Amino acid sequence: MAEHRNMQRAALLDAARSLLSEGGTEALTFPALAERTGLARSSVYEYFRSRAAVVEELCAVDFPVWAAEVEAAMAAADSPAAKVEAYVRGQLSLVGDRRHRAVVAISAGELDAGAREKIRAAHGGLVSMVVDALSELGHGEPRLTAMLLQGVVDAAVRRTELGVAESAAVIADAAVAVVLRGVVTP
Image 1 (cartoon, rainbow, N blue to C red):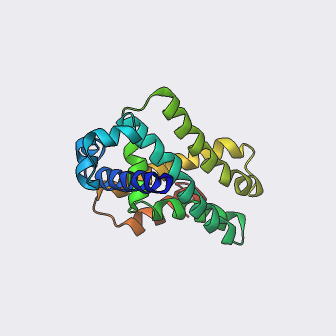
Image 2 (image 1 turned 30 degrees about the vertical axis):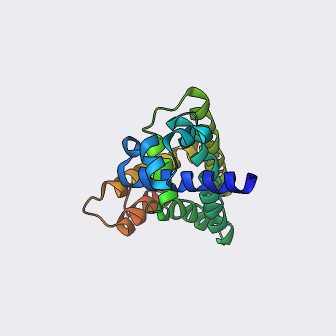
Image 3 (image 1 turned 135 degrees about the vertical axis):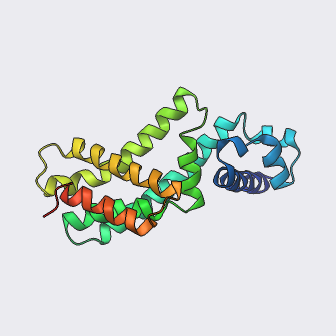
């Protein structure tokens, strides 16, 4: 029974990822979840009390997975600057991933304060990954620098998701250049 329930929950989360990826938070409705999974709408409520609860669960499940991917990319890098680059490129490489699209869509959702705080804490853990590399590069305020660096990554994510004229690779290269060299060109 517990295994069946876990499988149903996983199916609901997978359907939620697809809905968020395809149509943003507006597409994430209990009728749509029920239709995608073949469950009765009332059954969806047995697993989640609200759309915000679905989104919160997605964050709890997906954020650690893609944070681990970024962390692994950083661990494979051989210098502090390469770790910073891996941090930026690792996050940007996830932009097309359904898990990432779901987490990004969450920011537009109607989450309660507790859920928003959990997401902020998870995001803070991601930012913490790059603090040591920035410290090794000689930044006097590595935590502050990490937060500003994350702002560049967030802007690059938004730009990539807009599907503008630049390719994802061009946006990633520009973000890495800004992060590692600033805006002054030689």
